[in-house]
Image 1 (cartoon, rainbow, N blue to C red):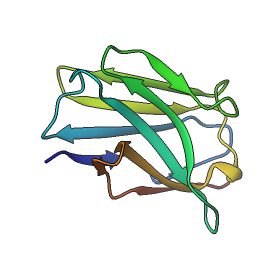
Image 2 (image 1 turned 45 degrees about the horizontal axis):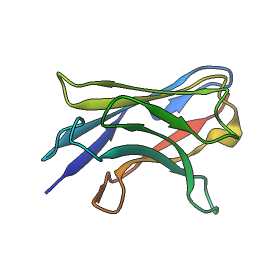
Image 3 (image 1 turned 30 degrees about the vertical axis):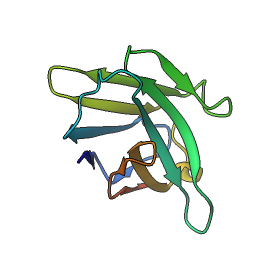
Length: 114
């Protein structure tokens, strides 16, 4: 059973870079056909897919966030990371890492505020 756990700062100031890590257990990042995603949900709004990194290391981004988003991975640690640059209060959300419908992290609240 795959398990995912997000970690990272819960508070940052506008213009800073949001950085989160997702630690994976029960599955390998390099398993053929697996795509590891970041999804967020702002307060009172729906889920927004941000991007993903595939089993081969290819990355995919939401067009609306592409210019500010970077997803990377460390296969030796079996974790993948999200960076979102130039954060604004509109980036305040619960951030999830996920493997499709197979598993989601519990989510971590990130607040962007001065």
